Image (tube, rainbow, N blue to C red; front, side, top):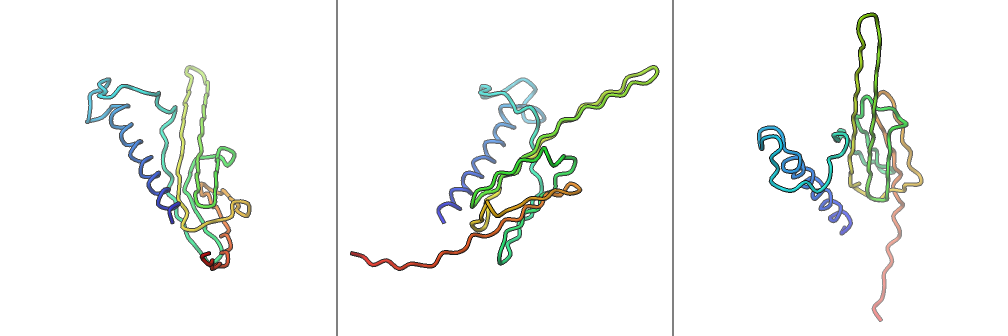
Length: 156
């Protein structure tokens, strides 16, 4: 149980860090005038804004199924890190389109990135898990770890 509590606390800490970075280190919008940071800039901003994909997590008798909406991403750009009690999903895409026709040049650049870390409701077996991606939907099926028999210890 300590692992789940620590994971939730770490996730909360990450969320608060992102919030403060958005508010103070990369000022824009209504909070501060552009260029006026109250805290010194410790590091550069990531090259792309990260969005959190919508994720559904369902637990069945034998597996945990995570479904994430990630439209516009190619499956080779998706990275999944899985431990027995945590799932991390990330993806980054860069596209450039250039079209030259008589009298004009059309050029467009797009960048996008997803990141989401999810504590799992139960321990899973990373080696017996698989992921599929189709039509912008990522599905990860993770087999639950078998519960070990309870062992009673005697105090010596």
